Image 1: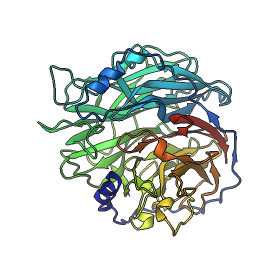
Image 2: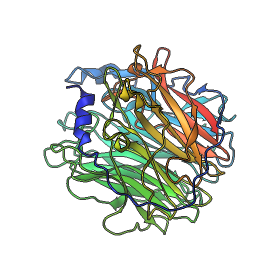
Image 3: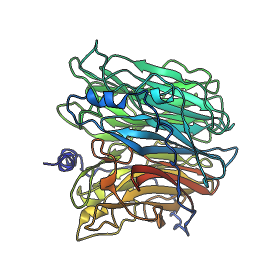
Image 4: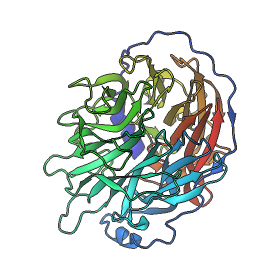
Length: 521
């Protein structure tokens, strides 16, 4: 059985339709015309092309399986944000030269000072050996602008192999943060928020959020995976591996990134359970809403338990999070995972992740994720839910992707890796990949955007879909990292009336490149 089919069967048991809270409100306004700017390649220059400090050949030789690969000039998993003091200043952030078994040779920022027309590649200093740091690899890039124009980044830095004196696990790993006051062109030396050298611990899937109401405050959240005695946790190297325990962690700065508080537990789901995909949103009144996928009963042997999109809130800038005990559980996530429609090759997608956004005017919260409930558990599409009461109650999940029905090959109806953002005039924009243009020649995919004008309750208000790729790409050419890999996420930001999408696709001789497109709903 291939990996894709195995994964789909493993997760299909989760696909039970459950009742959800429904937020009652006015009917959604049908989306109007969508206009897009030119498609621009962001990742043109590879800053690590001449790097030898990380000893690529040596890392390959250390792998006993002989399967380790590095995909040079492959850029994956981009994030993006826009400077609120200068809308022409856009910063993207991605993994450069992806490895097959975890992480990349380093993280690179793409900086535009002219609204996305042209880009400069900047290696974030002090992260990996290729950028003057001490770690071999880096992953999970994330960044966020403060209201004063300072941009903050957070990175997972790691050594994939353990030191010779501590065999049997993964190497040390750390979360590093730094900031830029000139729009991303230069960066401070990184600050270590947390570092673990015990092979039983892995800090993973971090994100950073600058408080839009106060430039002094920036928040970092992540999951800290802890395996049971004798079990080494390394999700990159053991397909389908889930941790024995994985608490949601929190740290913050109150001085604009000069210093960071000691990490502390935001939520502990208990033994044989974990969180993943932690993100913080800040509502207009300053409330922090900390989201995570709560995976209950997730042991390495038993496989995945129920996936809950859950949250806790803070009304004191992160000093405390409520409710005490169990979180607010908004919706079940019911993915089956994505495979290519013809060969059914596994696609590493966002199946257990999600994306969230907040309306900076009225505080409405929006969430999107992959879900198979609309197809009866056959394939994933894009689910959408919203809250108008600071996250207490949520609308029933609605399908929002506009992928057409395909009776010849239903797997061409799959949609995956969703992102969501809200423009200044309240338009909710959702992006995703799908296979609608696939033919028997290759496994063809595209990137799309759809939008709705608030309040967007239900999926009926989403329309006027825009294609963000100019030409379909063959996803078989993408890097392979536990499946064909474009990223566990891709970026989408909004400022004023525009949305700013960054996404990846195979391009020319490169396994994957980062592209940018502006869209105005």
